[in-house]
Image 1 (tube, one colour):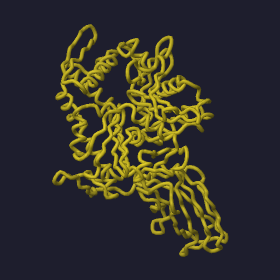
Image 2 (cartoon, one colour):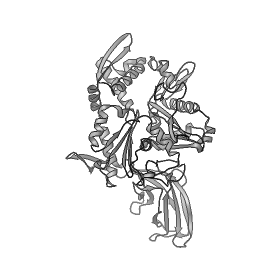
Image 3 (tube, rainbow, N blue to C red):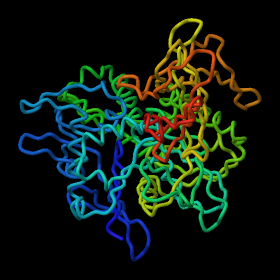
Image 4 (cartoon, rainbow, N blue to C red):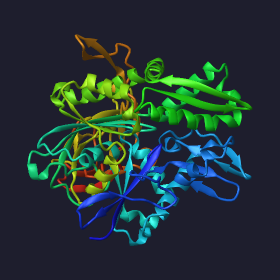
Length: 526
């Protein structure tokens, strides 16, 4: 087997690894000039647009470029991929720079620094946040050389961590809490019942091989919340203590933000720190404790957001008959999980579960490489989908659900739908698919009774929201010959979803018995 590499592009740090065939395990790479010195050679996700060259990774810190009072440092730029349209343009050396430019530059430079060129690599595995797979894939397709995309596979970050932590209890329910610099991603996975197959399956957007040895995704969700938010809250808090505003910092904002991030990291292992800051010509020393940090998180709604996201995950799990007390394994990934008050909050929510904490920065990249061995994951669709039709009462287009939320894919059996003409002498039937109510869980109130969440539909729920997925292009049509008449079923449509979430349709004319569409692609389900 050829060389296999993986990159876990993180908001704060990036991990790279390769598969050691002799030892049959993943090993973390040390990239010269990019990786930090020490036991864990992570690559800081930093870009400094200098006058003479653009510098990334550990060299930025080695040269103290993250301490400079200027606007040339880019950090937390991964967030721009999952929240486009929020970028600020910075003119640097006469060239406009955005966070997306920095992200693109960082990833391409990182890939170029791998021990061998992509043309000689058999498989390159990249990771993506649970809640932003589609946005991430679109960005990757624009960033990477299209001639190499057949070598590249994308794996769900939080699900990969279950394999990276090597939980090997057959049938175990493993909750992965991936809480990094930019996102909180949750994934509840049930491992296979066969002991020899445990710890083998992952959600590949494009699968390396078939999913014969499969784990099962029970529920997953995510939101844009992470350590970079904590850094900003610390920055605001420091400014308030000094009687300043963030806007008044000017070029001093970037080095002070670095000091705030350093203090947050230190508070994961010690009771208190002193934030040293130089603003203008004055020096300041600001003491900060773990208790101060916990209060800061509370004031900014951090723990409420965490609990709401956990509740949303458990709402989906409840439909599978799984409750909090059933979860015995919680795998923690990402630097934000190192904050003591965060770990206590998770332990309080999952009282019966053991926490896995020893690989917060490497479980994802190691697990994603294991995915390259070809083991699949039985996954499910997090949204529901409908087929557009003409409402006979209103004369307007409407959507009927044909694929419910939670449907497993790839399909084991086709989903059959009978269709009839909506007007006399109709010559064809269109197939337009809509994603129904993509924020369905936000229409639920969570109330706590005896310490347990109870989900209640809001009384002011609006009509179902629909995002038409293939209405912009000429829709796929099934011709009717002879033309159809209202009041009688004319088409039997059979839908199936493949392993890559592509929706296919076969259409049979009930009047003539002919197959008029056979296994035709419709749309990729978001």
